[in-house]
Length: 413
Image (cartoon, rainbow, N blue to C red; front, side):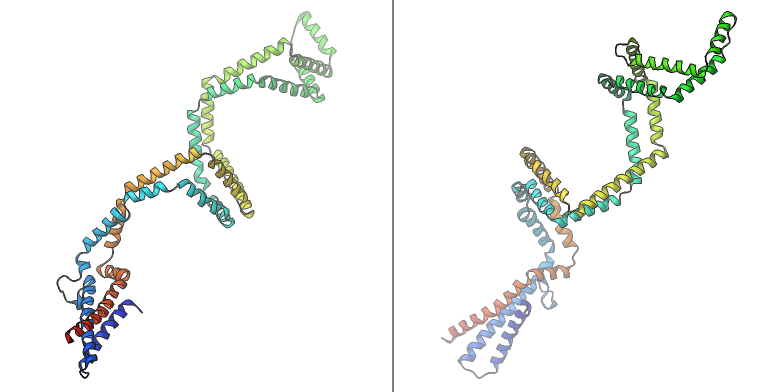
């Protein structure tokens, strides 16, 4: 039974009891009951009036000093705000509480509990996979192109190339490249088709030579003596012999060609005009449609690969994800100084946030109360504290009844 109904019933009982005793024959019991019911009725009505006057005008009559909550609405709101800001939720208590909390340890414990659940790991992996699938890779392409273009514009390619070339030469990569090229040329010139090609080219070029006199006669005799096959064999042998000379580490020709190669490379990497041309070419190629298409394909490939890995990990229950988290947690747990520093940073940030926004607690309470009309405010207060207030009415009626009995006995004596 609701307390309001109980209070009304108690008041009705006192009223009915008083009325009934008025018509009963006079005797000691009736006199005592009449005095008790009369005092209980007076106490119940007085307490009903007092409780009702807190929320509204009793019987709708504008009696002075009634409907106290609505008349003092602003004062009550300000008192409530002041109590919350200065007593219940004051800055000092919040800051003291924050200083006692080990934020990083608390967060680590919560994350460990979360990652320990297989269902939670699967849900996290599914959410990440869904997020990756919805990523608009086309929108990322202009930003990637812009970032790469800015890097190329600001990059000192000459200095970088000089450093790289110097490192490669110190490691002997230029000599290795020369030996690789000589090996390739040697293999190419040793082929029968190469010999035939060299002989044909030499025969055609010798036929084009025009000399007069004795030299011309001697040259024509030589040309008539050798054919294309003989010329090919001669040239093939000469090339092979030259390559062998270049391969010999003691050969002066080898040292000379290596030196010339190095000089040519350094001249190339220090040529500002050539570096600028390379930059310009790179920027033009980077902004081209072909470059955008290439980036789109690569990003989509990376995304598909990542989604496939996430799906595979989700099917396995996220064991690798938990292993990765456990490894990171153990590694971070060994860095006590780092943890302490982050504890202080996070705590300082939270305290600063509380100090800067503490006044918003009162504003939030005031805004919510201002949104409520008088009827809603009264109903809310009656719902929260009305139950206890109705018991005042019940206690008033009962207490009045008992006091009435005592007073009646005193009057009899």
